[in-house]
Length: 156
Image (tube, rainbow, N blue to C red; front, side):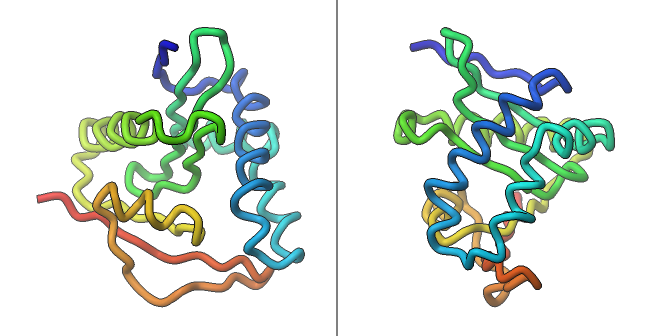
């Protein structure tokens, strides 16, 4: 299976939303209170994703050669990774690492970024630790009950 990487376009918003919601429902929501689901999933709607793209947020995509979306990494302000999903059936194939490296290089090239941040779900912590991120504070709980771990990565 070949994977092609490219920057997302507004017409990709539906596919991005489907993948993000599917992975979120499988891996993130079971560890969160029911009150967190609605607001979290709304931010993954095609309408919301299109608006984020129009606001300048960059979505890096990994596409399978059969035309299915394999992964997405979304960056705000060339420094904050706010969405990062790989299709469950493709975990362990190096797609996440390749997608992160492309996203990081793009931010470095565009803005000279050396400090990256994110808020990780418990399930994603091992992945981000493997990428070199470290916890940067206590667990955060939003007003909807969503629990996340703030993390950062500082490049030399």
